[in-house]
Length: 344
Image (cartoon, rainbow, N blue to C red; front, side, top):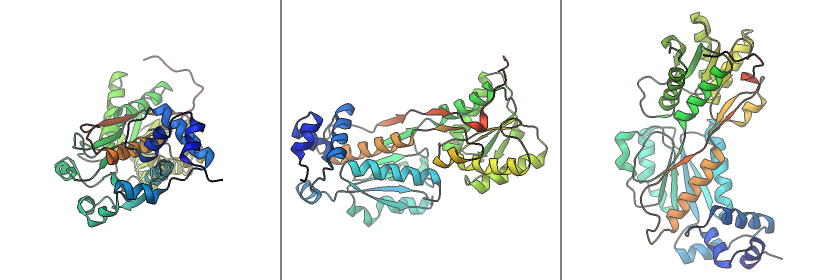
């Protein structure tokens, strides 16, 4: 038989109203309660009557996610997590690619296609702090990423500075002192590269290690090809290094390929750590150490925040919220060491 709202309520041990609030997303619900309800929905295979719900609420039941490009594994995996999180709450998600182009991103924010959506999650790459006023829109909007801070919308952020610090600290802890960085951006002050680099410098300073300019390799692109090219540049320069902190996993995967091709033993001669915890890093040879920024949590919190805003007709949620997601250091074969850690 088809599961009903009452069936879900009974299985979760809550009221029908609570289940309705979770499904519709426009009331505050404790995280533990929401999880019980979602688990019951999955177990029973409950399908909300979206057409009836949306007709009553004056909504489409569709939300949007705008990202620079799905060719970046991070954004592809983020999109997958967002799709799953929104599906559990009865929403359909449409994915838009902007190419990271500023004009395309600004056009998206004011485009006519938004009339099909109840709200938008937006991860910009081209816009900057100079464009913060463009976020003053008349529909629910949640910002992702590190291009604009202090704007008028809810903003789900990863801990880039802290993650960059942790990656560098891990390499220091296994005895490395000449730590190269791949993927820095020239003159960038706000953005993932600048923030992760800030964490790198802070860790070196706190551990009494002098920063060396020749160990920072600038690269505007963050694909595997950029990591490979940056690593070749580093090797050909003759600069001595015993570790690499790649500012994302794609750069790190490119670095691993070149190090292997050139007979550089990882991690014995050069330890490597990335940032993003992409799935493919687990299957690299050697497997890739990385900073896990909490991508599933980022997706869930962004969806939750957006759906709260969609249902917040009375303005109870309040002003813009900065929502920080915890990170973790994931140690794998590319930076494992059995050597004693020297004291500084």
